[in-house]
Amino acid sequence: MTYQIKPLSCDPAKIKGMSERLIVSHYENNYGGAVKRLNLIDEQLAELDYTKAAGFLVNGLKREQLIGSFERWRSEFVAMGKALGGGSGWVLLSWSPRDRKLVNQWASDHCHTLAGGTPILALDMYEHSYHMDFGAKAASYVDTFMDVIRWNNVQRLFVQTANDRGAAGDTRQ
Ligand SMILES: [Fe+2]
Image (tube, rainbow, N blue to C red):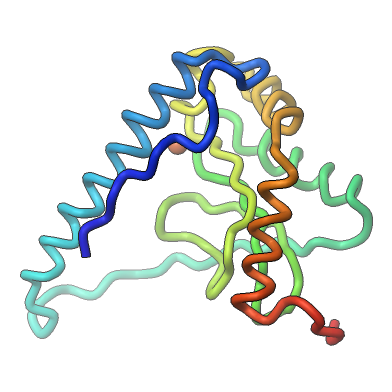
C-alpha cells in the first residue's frame, strides 16, 4: 500500500499563537517526510524474509486513565505534555476498546500507542513542533496548543470512532 500525503487540514496562517512557518514546516518536513519514509519502509518490509530476520522488542505502553471531569482530564493532559518538554513523544487522548473509555497516554515514539486504541487528539511534543516559535519554552507551546484545539474535530473523531468501534451506547464501565 502506498500512503498518500493528505492536504493540510487547517489554514496555517490562522493558528493563533503559532506561526505559519512553524505549521508549514511541520506539515511538509515532518508529516510529509514521515509519509515518504513509511512508503520506503513498506517497500523494505515487503522484501524482508521473516524466517531469517531478527525479532524486535516492544517496550510497552504507558496508559493513563481518564477519570472525572474535563478539568481533571485537561490538567492531566497538559501536565503530561509539559512533562515531555525537553524530551520527545506525543500525548494522546485515545479511545481504548479494551477499557471502553477514553484515556490519556504518552507515546514515546512511533511504536508506542495504546493497544487497539484510536487516538482522537494528539499533542506533538517533538521539538520540531514548537522550537521554531517557542524555543525551549515547551510549556508555553502546550498552553497555546490547548487554546487552539478544534473541539468540533475532536468530537467528530470520537463520534466516528464510537460508530466504528462500538463506543456509543455502551453502558459497561
Ligand atoms: Fe511532529
